[in-house]
Each structure stands twice: as C-alpha cells, then as structure tokens.
Length: 266
Image (cartoon, rainbow, N blue to C red; front, top):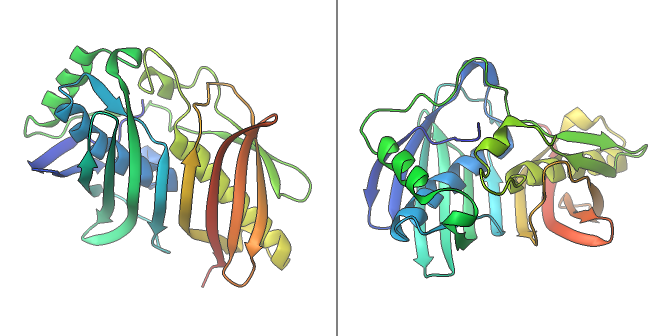
C-alpha cells in the first residue's frame, strides 16, 4: 500500500483539496509521507487533465519546508495548485496542514508525464479517482498493513549511508503495478537523515539533537528499482547556515542530489 489521499474534497480549476486520515499504527506522519501526500494529490489532477492517458512522476522540487513540530495525528488536510501544465509535465505547489496548522509545504515542483499504461492501467486509475471523488473518505489501510519503510546502513563517521527498499515491499503493488519504482520521497527522506548525521558529526553532538526543516534543489535523475542499493554522501557546504549537500549514487552513476538545511533542536 502506498496511497496517502483518501478523499478529494474539491477541485476548482487548477486547485485541488483532499485529506488523509493517518492510520493509528503509523504512530504519526513521517516526513516523507507529507511530501508524498502533496505529490499524490497534485498527480490526481494531472492524471484527470490528461484523461488518464498520462501520469506525472517526481523529478525536481525547488524547496520543501517543514515545521519544527511535525508531531501530528488524525486527519491531514491537503491542498495543491497546478501552476502550469502541458503534455510534457506539470508545475505545482502544495501544502499539508493538521488542525489548521501548516506543517509542510512544497514549491515549484515539476512532475514529468509518463504514459499511463507503462505504470498502471488507465481504467484502474480512473476508478480510484472516481472513488476518491465519491463524497466519502475511502478506507485504504488496515491495521495489518505494513508501514512503508526503507533501509539505511551507516559507515563509521555517519557521513555516508547505504539506502535501499526491500524487493518484496508491499508498496510496490501501487508504486507502480506495471513498473515497480522506489518512491523518490523515501530516498529524499533518507538523504535528509544522512545530512543530519553529517551535521551532527561536524558539531560533535548527538544525531537525535539535529533535525532538518528545509530541503532545496531536489533533482532526481532516474528511477531506482526495488532492491537497488544507493550510496548517500553528505558534505557540509555552509556550516553557519546548516546547509549539507547530499548525493545519491549507484556506483559511479549519480541518481539524485539535494541541499538539506539542518539545525540543532530548540
């Protein structure tokens, strides 16, 4: 399972709103889930506008902003705005709120379109969209469904990590049925954690005393397949701003780059 929109509550031109009820067994919202929910909501509008012949996938994000206090439960309130679209890609922004408090926002996100039938059935996507627009929240998760997760192994100084998602993870049933792909949001989250570890090592403090609240210049260059092991490397660019640049590589092949802004918890 990898769906984080359980109802689309309104569509008005290029504006779309929705919601997601956090399953209790999640124990809150992971950072990657907030970004994924925004992307999925915007994606539904992009798919509808293409008459379900194409779907957008994550590639470039100018910035992700996260509140320091991201502890939430209950229903997430989602919104997205399509700023520009053509047959090649959509440009969008969006946010997530909880009880009226914004906890995450994404700006200048570019989602290139891929042919729908390479990823999943057009009829299946259309049926799911209709269900989300039916006026009733959909029950997507059972208590027995595994919380999506990734693996992260560190080297001794914690500035380098190895990232992967198990080949048999349930999330690949939806991401995507015809071409399983590791969600970019999981990789970006792991890169954020690597940045925090590198920053903590440089400051000589505990890793759990550092958090990231901003991610900029996300560039994903290619898909990552289930089981692929990527090497994540963090290098501090601007110590006074907390900026850490992180690269994800597959051997000598650069897969993704981000700039992560870290700081010690208040």
